[in-house]
Length: 113
View 1 (cartoon, one colour):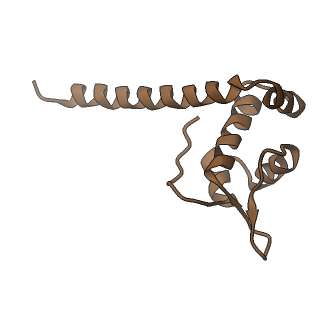
View 2 (cartoon, one colour; view 1 turned 60 degrees about the horizontal axis):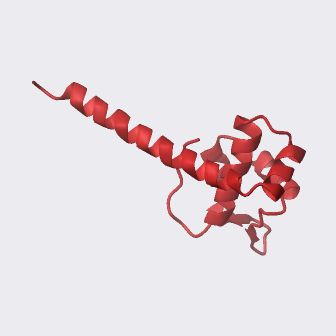
């Protein structure tokens, strides 16, 4: 679950949808279904998500898309299990380390002997 978002205070719904490779309608739906996601809205009604909202989306994405939970199951897991967020952050760190190791391997393979 590699999410490529720049460090910003707020992200538009389009940026979030593109980062997670889902439709904007799914982001709006998850916003309705999960009360932990609370985007800021401007006068026009445009949603702006904080980095904390992005972390919540990572957890929801992990539970629903990768682990196969139903929305009700994901909601219950978020409410009852604090270890879910720890697991997701650990997976993010491991994926980063894996990517760095692949870069190192590629650099070693391409180096002249």
